[in-house]
Structure formats: structure tokens, C-alpha cells
Length: 261
Picture 1: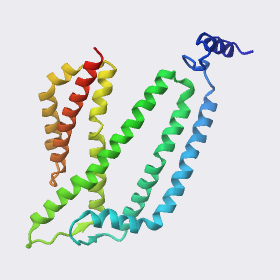
Picture 2 (picture 1 turned 180 degrees about the vertical axis):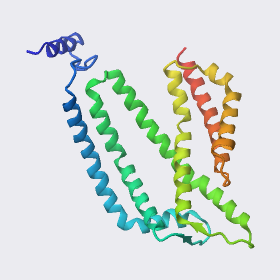
Picture 3 (picture 1 turned 180 degrees about the horizontal axis):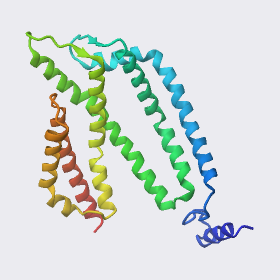
Picture 4 (picture 1 turned 90 degrees about the vertical axis):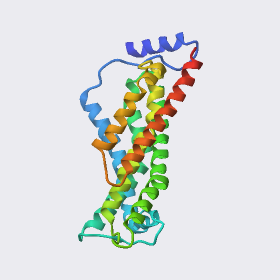
């Protein structure tokens, strides 16, 4: 019998019948070709559903984009294209994003399954503990961007133009703004989770975060107004939401600090 298997069984027996092994079964190096073969198999398992979803969504992308773009505005405004291929590129990008969104659970599963043999139980638990809440936070951020931030910004910009200048909305630019805003707010909504994990892992403390509050505020405002500044005002909303979420993170870390005493 293989020595590594015997050692694994001994570790299992020392756990009083518990079948959870305290570490990887074997530390032997797997040949590179086996790693590459497994990686290729898992990539194929992701790419095939990704391609199928893209092909399914693309024929109906006109309908979906109509609801995504036109229904975003309170007024009955038309969307314009300024090049022959602009609308086709928007449809293709939308289909790819839908396929990516649908494939994310499969990507995470295949990634975890690929790494799992070399991970300790605590590392597996940490992976699952981080990924699922992170996806939830990202979804809440994207939801907030589409249903609250974007309608507020566009309604102000359209009303500000008045009756002198008529607003013409470019399909490509509007879709890019929606994507940029959804991704931005999705990342911003990770702030409380990142702060909580940092305190849990003892990388920082609540007192340290509270003491650096003004510096962090300055960094957030500086990035919003000088690095990602945009004329629509979305960066200002991102800065305000970042500060609010930082304060929420402080409350959570303060509660964690009290419980750990």
C-alpha cells in the first residue's frame, strides 16, 4: 500500500472517527501534464456552456437591451447609433456579459475543484466563506447602480439640458456607462466585507481603521475627483457611497471586536 495513503488513514484514525483530514492527503508533486490535462478539461467544461448561453441570448438581445437601455429613462427617449456596426457590437458584448454572469457559479466550482486537492480544510472553508458573500455584495452593488444611481444621474442630466439642446443617447456610450457604473458599485460594496476579513485575520484593528478615517476619506475623494472623475457625476456618487460603506464597515468591525473579547 502507498505510504502516503497509510499516513492519511493514520491521521483519519487520530480524528476519533471524523473523516475530515487535517491537510492534503499527499504532498507528492503531480506531473505537469496531468495538471495541464485537468486544467484543459475544466476550461472546456466552462467554455462550452459559456458559448451555448451566448448563442441563446444573442438572438433575443434586442428585446433585453430595449428593457435595459430604454426603460432606464423616465421619458420616452430613443437610442441612437453612430456607426453601422455599433449596435451589433453592443448586442455581442451584452450576450457575452450574460453568458459570463450565468457561468460564474460554474467557474467558481471548477476553480475550487481544481485547487481543492492541495488545500487544507481551513483554506477550503476560507475560500467558500469569502467567495459567496463577495458575490452577494457585488450583486447588491450592481442592483443599486442600475435602479438608483443611474436613474438619478440620467434624470438630472436630461432635465439640465433644457429645451435648447435636445439629448441624443448613443447606444454604445450608454451601455458603457451602465457597465462601468455596475462594476464600480459592485466593487465598492465589497468594502465592509474586506474590512471585516482584514480584522478577522488580524491584519488591522478597529482602532487602526478608525484612526485612519480622515486619511481614507481623503484618498476616496481624491480618487473620485482626480483619477476617475467624469462629467456625469457618477464618481461623486461612488465617493459618497464608499464613505458610507466604510462607516458601515467600522460599525461591523467594532461589533466583531466586542464579541472577540
